[in-house]
Amino acid sequence: VSETKSEKLKRILLETAESRIRAHGLASLRVRDVAKDSGYALGSLYNAYKDLDLLVIAVNSRTLGRLKVVLQEAVASQPDALSQMKVLSVAYLSFAVENPHLWSALFDHQMPEGAEVPQWHLEEHADLIAEVMTPLAVLMPDLDEAALALRARTIFSAVHGIIKLSLEDRFVALDQRALSDELLGFLECYLKGLEA
Amino acid sequence: VSETKSEKLKRILLETAESRIRAHGLASLRVRDVAKDSGYALGSLYNAYKDLDLLVIAVNSRTLGRLKVVLQEAVASQPDALSQMKVLSVAYLSFAVENPHLWSALFDHQMPEGAEVPQWHLEEHADLIAEVMTPLAVLMPDLDEAALALRARTIFSAVHGIIKLSLEDRFVALDQRALSDELLGFLECYLKGLEA
DNA sequence: TGTACATCAGTGAACGCGCGTTCACTGATGTAC
DNA sequence: TGTACATCAGTGAACGCGCGTTCACTGATGTAC
Image (tube, rainbow over all chains, first blue to last red; front, top):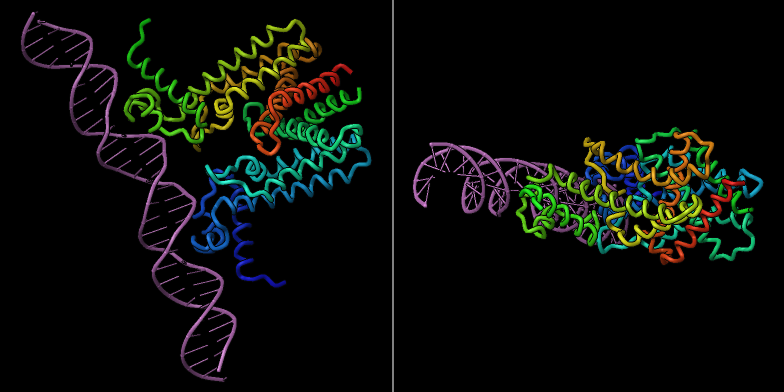
């Protein structure tokens, strides 16, 4: 493999930032810690990335990529649309449980006032919904593209909400098994309601 | 009415902090701005509240109180459990739309590392779920208290998730009417699934 | 192969600012006699 | 009613630190002849 110095720098910093977020969460990510762990000097980070926010976005982009693969594999593992929907939500839950900090970072990160999230990254977020749309299109064949997208988004948000509040609340600490049961029960109700 | 000086100080600071959060959001709340708007000096804030976090919690506590009243009135306005569930979610949506920043602050605020949210405030959060439990108990009479609480929480989280992602995403900007329709459609599916 | 020069990668001290919190102080209010 | 003293409410300059970002500099690598 051939990798220029500047590619290597970007890669190392990306990996370092990722492992710091994985271990300690986005909220306590510090430029100095990334630099120190990476083996590079403080200033090098700004040779590779415009600023810290863009490095975080690079990490989130990577996380989204991995999540997307997981969801695609989940869909591919099932023969019918109904079980595809179920396995999707369980796969999403597993990903969140296994990568809590990286997963939170996807939704917690926000740009400083005045700065905008780059378009390509917004699209990566939107792409996730597409994984839900495929099986949903089978279940609801008479919806047009736009209505389908909206519906997929709604289901995604609901599942996301259930997982998020359950995981962050020490108050009702469900283990993954119980949470997965609850999630499946919920989804089953909803999908049964769709048929009726 | 009789109000001691220290009660007045707390009240004014609370009202000021609330109106600043309402206007600009929790993320840009600054001690100096609160002090300036309140008419008191910087140091006075620390005579009334231990620190900024406790002032924020006081604001959130107030918001939760108002939200609870709204939900209670919604439940009271409907004769049967099914329409109570529906009106609950619409009332929740309306509250979020009308008080976006105050509503976000409820879930965005987090204590600095090492500090804990006071117990009484955690309970206020949990109390919200109770409003969902009442109508849900009618719809699912054979669940025991614990299972009911879990189920209520799940539904609450789902509705919350749908609203949250829809409101914060400029990407798919639904107006309240469209979002309300989507929410009701979703809930209807779910509740229909419950019966079947 | 060697020399002179140009470009590139990497460095880290220093900058600059935002911001929560403190605390010694002041003026107002209350109390005792 | 007046005086001396004690307590209380309120003040804001100063503290202290964390942290993202910059930039003049250095040593390494590449190029030309």
